[in-house]
Length: 432
Length: 125
Image (tube, rainbow over all chains, first blue to last red):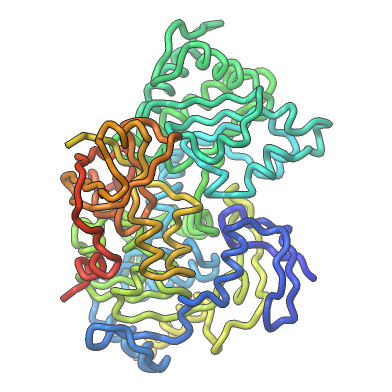
């Protein structure tokens, strides 16, 4: 029996117990559904165990030499290669990905760009107050899920931060208030207690609510006389009282707040609202945690920002970083690529059809451990070990805390890790 | 034809990553080619379980199976993130538009496109 961190989601729970003889995992104790599924991937029927190349309209098993040679050929033929994904890889693999992009004059971006990385981008202007899970376990008295269905996306989050009894508080769930702002009654609402507050906001009206709160916050002892965004004035009053009275509150920002038509304003104004409240607060503060799904979504920001001053969208030319505002979306949308290398993600399943069609129109190399919609259309598929089980490495939890993942088993068929495979590609490119 | 708002969402019971890892083409279609609506909307549209929903907007068109859930507000359709939902999502000013997407909804007896059909649509000839 040993305790290992879980790479099932971005919470990276470090209290999972496994029973293993080093060859197989016999038992997993303490993991949620997502964690359990992560460990089950080792023997999943759609696991990729050999390199594949598209031949005669279908993917065929080939040798590593043939697959790597084809990969090198596609990269060498490309003038504008695109690298995307990396949120399901370790930070070491992310660094190798950046090195590869630099070697081949490519553009590299992570999944965070279309997810929580956007909030950090906006926070460069406004500032942001972040916190950690440990701080919340020990001290939180107000937890707000805004456009975030934590019960399904990060299944053990609420166990940890809402139902825990903290080190510095003698009380637990009974003094913690949960507020959920969402148009849909998601599974997270099932844990609501009598002192909690359910706010069923009208779809796309988050900005109206934030602006109303900002206005009320700026006025001494002001309480809203009428409702906004489908919420009545009593609910608004309770929300305001909780926001201004919390000693240690947190807002979990979910995907529901990241809508493009208005998003820059929503996130910007929400961060401004938090600052406004914190300025007025006498006895505490409100912080933010971004709810990303992939287990190392935060990692790419941590790797890229200190070295290049940007948390994503790195364009290299002749080994140098080029100034650009491009993202993976603008690159595909504007047809500004001629080959793509997709690492540990499935853009065909999560990008709109228009972008998928463009992505599929050019040579595509997939590096992943399981079949996906993207692997179906790839020219070359290179399998890798499952990070957190068959390969170790550093990852960042959703609260920006580093967690070291461990290698528990050897990968089947001597499959390399993402980091090892990317190193092999760089080496081969340098030799040819 | 009714105008509704579409939100693409990630749900633990309708998860494309899980279906790709552990499922097959049939389970993918069964669990992901769905639109979840409020029972009141179901009644208003005179739906029956053998009919499908055809969603149409400036990004494209998709046919999905209907599921009812009283927790969904009226006028809203939820679709799990997948290759089916992607047919009617798009981009706005180089950013993804995955939520609050306007769609025209009508009833149809047309079949749902299979995973293989959708991949064929995307794939290079």
